[in-house]
Every structure is written in structure tokens, then in C-alpha cells.
Length: 102
Image 1: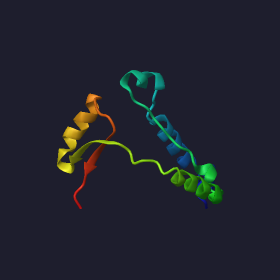
Image 2: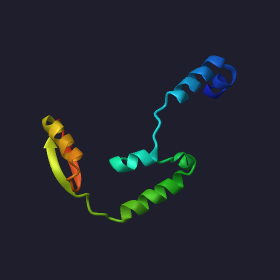
Image 3: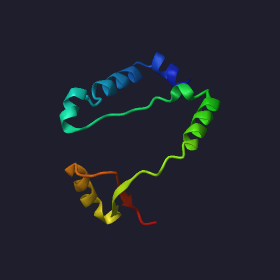
Image 4: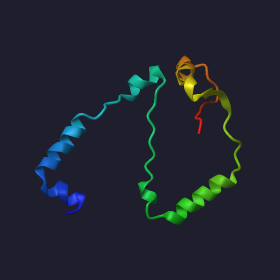
């Protein structure tokens, strides 16, 4: 049986799915605005069978030759708490980069 047919004929799977749906996080975008928070998502599943379009778009993006992002602050991995505090302060400009030793 495929996963889709499992859901079609298995009431336990439907109950599990309903339970997961009811327990999902609920986000109200209007409550997020004062806290300067956002949720972003990109649904690229429609590109699944359009690989040529994806390759063309990626080539066009790379052809833009954009400058690298501005790095405002760099912290060692051990300084992660300080980096998080810096982010929470709201005073950062550019990227906050964490360096991980190899």
C-alpha cells in the first residue's frame, strides 16, 4: 500500500492526522507584528517536474553577480549566547555570523 492509500483505508491514521492537526502551533500574524516576528515559507513543489525552468531561474540568479551579504557581527561558537543577545537587542545591521571550528 502507498502512504496515500494508507490514509484512505486506515481510520487510525486519520485519527493520528486529526490529532496532529489539532496540536499544530497556531500563529496569528497580527499578534506577531508588535514583536517583530514573521513566518516565511516557499512552496516550490510546483517546480518538481519543471527542472529546466528551475535551472534557467538559478542561472539567471547567478548571472546577477550580487555582492556578498554584509556581515555586521561575527562570533565564535562559544560566543553563541552573546550573539543571541545581540540579535535580541534589535541593534544589529547585516548578518550575525557564528564561526564553527572544524
